Length: 592
Image 1 (cartoon, one colour):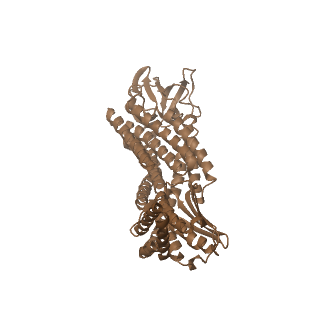
Image 2 (cartoon, rainbow, N blue to C red):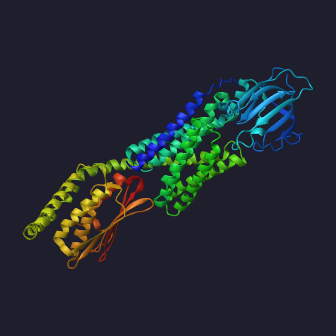
Image 3 (spheres, rainbow, N blue to C red):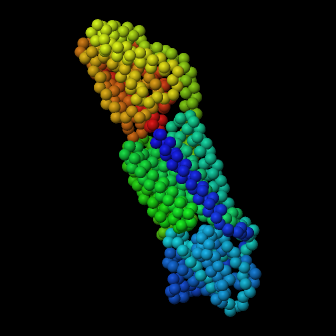
């Protein structure tokens, strides 16, 4: 099974498992539906972690990481009996009492399913002027929102559910419209990527990963708002879905960054990616088995994701030095987004900004860039498809000519003549030569019906068969050297053999006296595979190659098929009296 298929199966398992996590968490809860504007202030004193009571003011630092918070005082303005008070809880427990008598309690220590963010209501009991409201706030998490206590005090309202919903819907309307735009554009990117995959176009898998990441980030951004609970009061679903969406989006960002890397850096990044995938699977298993809530696994996930993101950031920066212009742009985007993710993970502890602002802003800007890049790719590939149709028509007309050009009468005559003389000297070698000649004819003729890419290993066999037959004729006058680093890539059939034949026919044979050498070199570069055919023959003046016999069929058709079938480039360099070098560069995303 190919590595791409294995990776796809692993990602599919993680995504299916994530869906099971959210479904199971919602199914196991008995949470009731909550139905939902004068803003209130709480005036009085506070005591944090059992310390002395101090006057409560708006500029007091009330860190949710510094222990429990006790408040005592009254609401401003004064409220009548039966008033409905709304407040926003962000993963904290709350206990309200009047003159020491408990009147309200909301804590995940009582019901772990209720650990989340959302609006809660409290019906104010009958109170006199001397009665004191006491509020106890408790943060059971070491990781989360440092400003949770202050956020609660800033979100006190006397309101009805409808009025509060209208208030926040108006405030969040531009943000919601932006999320809808991101959602629609993400679906469009995914559709475009699937089309690219079906057409075997470059950057298809990268575009698919980025489209899926954008979709998940949109889900996270949509759920990470105060008004979501006013429209969807399922706290468990909101909490689990938001966390899972962020985890999977970060995993896809990791996978996309890995695809931008090459060689040793990619292998190292893949190891880090598999470790992260295993960690995500472990955290989801812990949440599914109710050992720990998924929000409580956040600190451990943040450490794992942060370390992997840091490794990928360093590897992407190193990759920039040896990348092409287009790759450099994508790598820079990856570095910026990974850096924003690391900053956001750290902010979960230090809380320099609120509501994931860094990752949201950076992602939003880069998404617009990604969308423009995707549109540009569509335009480029549309133009290429028009050109490809013209080339394909011409190619179909020339396929038979191309195949027959590989079986020139003089080659058949020379090969048969060599075999004839071998029959008198070495019968066993003659039999092998006949077998090689038969294989050569079969492979050459099969190109007429071949419309898909073949492995380089298969093409190499054809090249070696051809050269063995030519060496029967030239003997020691034809030297052949191979420097093959890689064979695990794809290319069009009969794209190397015609170049080797040109090297022998138009390079070595034209030297007259003395021996000649043909060298076939294959190496892997950061962004492509290079196939180089060189000879020390007579060479020619660049720009006059098309005038040579047969080269208009050979070189031209090879170049067209390389461009049409795998967006590869063919370059020819030559110097009279020194020889010729032909280089094919096949993009890795196509040839892999």
